[in-house]
Every structure is written in C-alpha cells, then in structure tokens.
Length: 181
Image 1 (tube, rainbow, N blue to C red):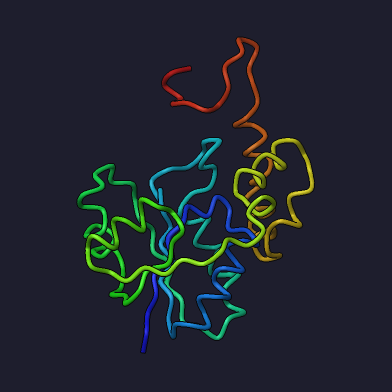
Image 2: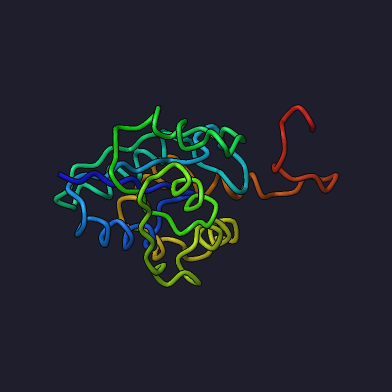
C-alpha cells in the first residue's frame, strides 16, 4: 500500500487541485491532504478557515475511489523543522506531491521522495483568480468543483471575501488585524 501527501492552502480548493488529486489517485492507495496555513482565515489571501477547507476537500474527494485524510497544518515559520512538523500532524506517508520549489527542497532534504506534475491550466485555475472573481462578483463557480461551490455558498464565502476586500471611508481595507483598525 502506498500513501501520498499533497499539501496546499486550498483557498479555495479549485479545479486545478481536483485535477492534481485525480493524477495522484492513479499512483497511491491513500492520500493525506495537508491543509497549509491552517491557522489563517478571514484575510484576502486566506479567507477560509481550516474547517471550511476540510469541508470543501472532503465533499469533493468522495467521488474518488481513494481513502483520503484532510489534515490541518499550521504555519510554523521555521523551514528547517517544517517537515518534522508536517509528519507529526499527519498519518505516515511514503511520497509527497508538490510543485512548490521550497516544499520540494524541504521534503528532499528530509529524505522523502517528491513527485511533481504539470499544473492543470494554471493561468485559469489559481486560488488568486477564484478569490478575485468572488470579490468582483464574477463567475468563480466554474473554477471550482460543484461541492466546493456549495460549501462556499453555505458559509457565505463570496460575501466574506467582498467584505474583506472592501475599503472603508478612510481607505483602509479588511486585510489586516482587527486591532489595527
């Protein structure tokens, strides 16, 4: 049995991520999905909570004949110990999947096999593009699996992003710490 590990912020989980999991599912029996920046939410870059992302991923990946585990991974901001942090939060895995150069380097330095694959229509399927379309009241639903759109609707995620990106009368936006306002 082979268990893989796929890390991402999944803000939100989109069709590019879905295509990557589809490719990974051909190589592994089980998949751990590491939800990076799990301690971040309600910002322009990280609008969704770890729990909301777990819902998105779990409801989407049910279609695959693959045992999956969604595991929140908080930011550590200490790259030299990041892999051991990931391993302590995750079921044991045999191979990691990432296209992020730093993540690839850190796993390789820790002696873990890393597999990369071409990103699926990266120019279109990118979290930034999905979030920007939400902020502009654009068509974001076509960029995410149906189950993700349902979760985002359930939590009023598009409204959240619109509020976070809005500017107040003084020109400040919701990007920062509420204590800074």
